[in-house]
Amino acid sequence: MDSTLQDPKIVKNIVHAGTKVVPFRDGTKVKFHYQTRKCDEVRTLIDDSRALRKPMELVLGKKFKLEVWESIVQQMALHEVARFRCDRSLVQQYPFVSKTIRDAQKPREERKHCCGMTVQNEGIGYRDLDELFTNPQDLEFTIEILAIESPDEYEKESWQLSDDEKRTLVGKLRERGNAAYREHDMNAARDSYSYAIGIIEQLMLKEKPDEPEWIELAQMKVPLLLNYSQCKLLEQDYYAAIEHCTEALKYDPNCVKALFRRGKAHAGAWNFARARADFERAAELDANLHTAVGKELAKLQEQQRLRDVEDRLKYQKLF
Image (cartoon, rainbow, N blue to C red; front, side, top):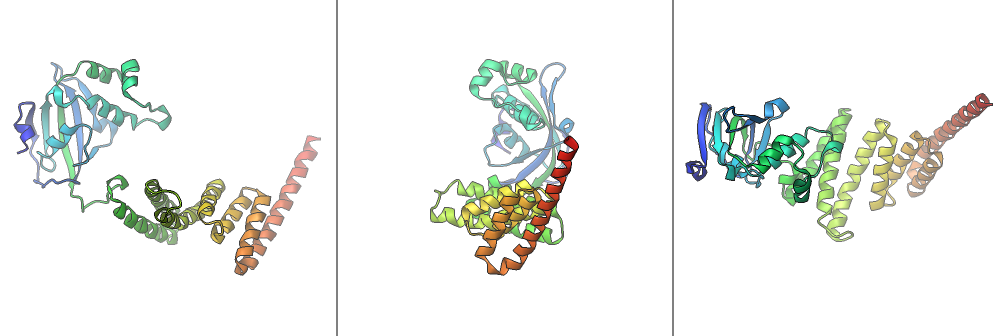
């Protein structure tokens, strides 16, 4: 048994026995529901994850801010329900953990950063948590273990991965996105490409710009930006497509696909001069595109003619 639970600062009472004892190790993911109560006469409820409709997920060994939770869940079996009374000295961080969880349910613009100075001047932002922070006390946690997954049973989130694992995941995400694209599942394809782009950006932050490692990562990023922009083109989200093609051109100024797709996006957004410039530059770089570019320029000319007609009609109505 964990030495923490032999300490009188933690008292465990089983409410419902578990169904299976599962070994724990660093990297194990534990999913559980929890209730947090004060240890007063009426056992005042502070938090209930079921009310949020979202269980807690904890990855062991990642230095979670509330260390006592790591200790107590490791003394439980799958589907067990137990109550733990924890001494105030072990739960001093709980108000901040609770704030983070509560804030996650709010729209981003309503969330408020909570630094030490803010706490001193304005409090945590929730009356019950402010009171708990000012007057620390023992807390009771009722924990129900829903799932226990070993590190090789689930796909790790990017923050859990080493740099080599992140590179491997980028390749898998690109393949997954390509497969979804072939199946015409644009949402899944776009999400896979976007996730992969985000991981590469994390890796690039660790390297110096224009150093060999940074350049290699930039080369990995370009096809993902192009794939993402293609999804956005098909969704008629033209400005997002323009943005991602422009970023690809920062890494590869002569990228024909980026120029051609940005030209189509500019055309869709009725930026005719910019569309023409991109198409013509793409044709200069790749003679095989002359026919395709000619068709796009013809469509562009027709779009511009229709736009001019619409504008004339609007002006006639004004006068």
